[in-house]
Amino acid sequence: MFKTVLVATDMVSTVDAPVLTATRLARKHDAHLYLLHVMESSSTDDRRLIRHFETGEEMLADMTYANVVQQALAATYQDALATVTHDIRITVGYPWQEILIWARALDSDVILLGPHSSRAQEKGVVRVAGRVGSTVENVITHETCPVMIVNQPASKDQLGLRRILVATDFSRSCDSAVCFAARLASRYAGHLTVFHMLPVPPVPKYTRENYLADEARTRDRLTGAYRSVLEKSDHQYLVRAGALPHLEILQCAASENIDLIVMGSHTKESSGKWYPGSVVERVGYRTACPVAVITDPAVLLHWDGLVPEEQHPEKDRLIHVFTGSG
Image 1 (spheres, rainbow, N blue to C red):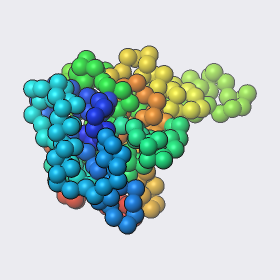
Image 2 (cartoon, rainbow, N blue to C red):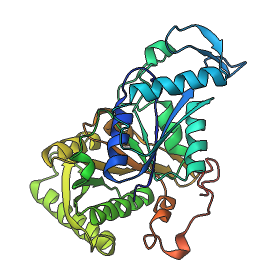
Image 3 (spheres, rainbow, N blue to C red):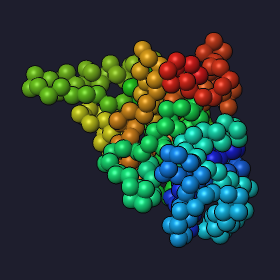
Image 4 (cartoon, one colour):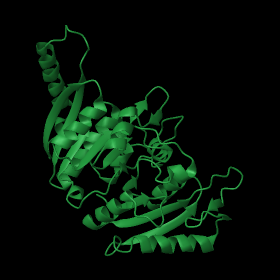
């Protein structure tokens, strides 16, 4: 399933967790890895005006400097890239836009990103707890390709994808996430946990009997919604009650020793605008394992048979923010 892996980093001389994870993922699944570094400018007048990654000196980006950055990245990841088929690409511009351009040009199967800029202090950006950062947010909101948020390097065992958790609230993107997770579990002989959280009303009248009745109805709904999708995968349904979905998901991932969390981003169906959603952001910011975010059924086009013909989106992978068309 993962034949073309794209990872972006804003670090040059320091090892970055998403890149290490991407190299291990590519090696594990015999994929072609593309390592992308975007030379970002803080200038609104000239996007080529950047700072040297070593000296901090302000300069204009050119091919000579791009070659220096490429060689530095190759040296930084020399051991990690060994035996991995790869290319290192250097470009200049807005990071999220360049990531989208390259993802579509390469027809990437997955994009790996860190939850926030590792150079936030240098750029004068304030990190906000529970937020994944503007680059990840913009990539998620404009791209149908799975976006994997990586907080810390995933181990080789984790990237075997033997234990997968998918969270659903029965929205369209979550349905797509369940389909994607089911295909992963089936392909890699993994065990899939389908998670749903019941919001518990903060009133004394909500009894244990009320909860058990709600849980039973939810399990019936999960079975009815996903029976055909999950029939070829080893799976279980897990229903929990709480007030903060991200905490329940994180606790479930820890207790089940999950290798990968799969989530659907939220949508505003009326306007067609995609956005990550607070639960996705909070899980992505705190998780100890990678989080794959799915936005649209178009993500399933790489793997035939998952999307009914009448639901196939257009070939253009860009999600048009104001129209919602694929």
